[in-house]
Length: 430
Image 1 (cartoon, rainbow, N blue to C red):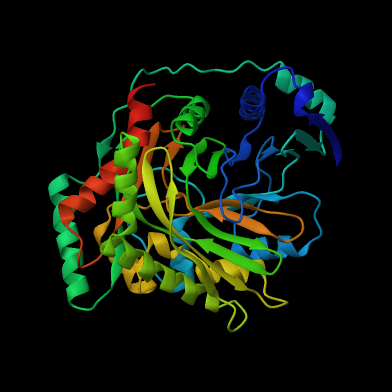
Image 2: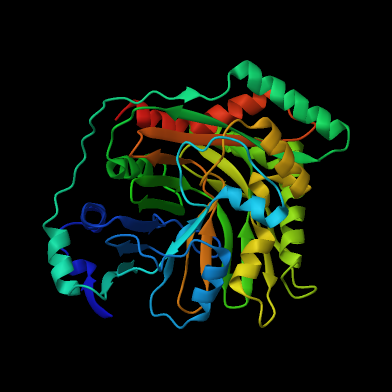
């Protein structure tokens, strides 16, 4: 595989503009595109590595099962593997099922080895390619125009469930909790639009500018797209260290510095938010203990407060050491789906999610990430994200919150609207 490195100082345009040209060139010329954007955000254990992976079209060698994934990871590679895990992989992991409709249509699991991939560091970008001269690729990127226009001025989404049904469902879930069925359930609702015609790439850059996050990304798989502004890490492997950073606890940012500090303090001292976060921390500890060396799982940070464009989030960090010989797929199977998007106990929470939600989640609350050639990996939690089927024109995003017995249904509904605000604002003001 040939490579060519460009120092940022030699680029004819800004780094951001060059990235936008690179992604525009990639989506015009390739059917399979995966892009990972850390937005230069300082984050405990570092954010995503800034990479772009490409294939001109899907290949029979692309990976669509756990078995094929583990077999591929055994091989010596000089490129990363890029791809995703959808929420409904849970059915095979826990003998569950789903009868809900799937309007977007991503495969349940998909990874690919890129023909061409780009890696950004602090001051360079390196192009690797097995199919083209990387210097020719650099010239092609620099001659690619960027489209910033939309065929529609505004896209209005509608909720899959009415406010009234949502409130009833939350009350029903509180009853399950009262009866000892479950402690906490992450209940989500969908907002969608039909017959939408748009280029998702300008939408990604617009959302990314409005809501920059450490685990953002863009995915194109033939006519299926993910536009992702995720603030949450699911799981990272670095050497023999496993790192999970669940988010539970949300409050809006203040309009003034004084109000913002007041909001931060309110979240920091909220017994309800701390209780929700602690439940998921315990669940993550339990998941990591299934694969980690005995006695090594620890809570590195509890109830950390992190500020994003629209919200303050409460984030905890749980780590563990994995013993020699534990395979990557074993680790993912033991911990997926992530506790922050399911509930506790996990299996009963998954059953109740199926009972009360109205559509398949698809890539929402799944995971988008990559495996590096040295065996390390990093995966986000797909939240604050849009899924789009360009063949049918179906556009969807979901938001949710953790339901406990102390939950107030109306407050949970308002939390969902707060989480939806960045995406709705971008869609309604194209």
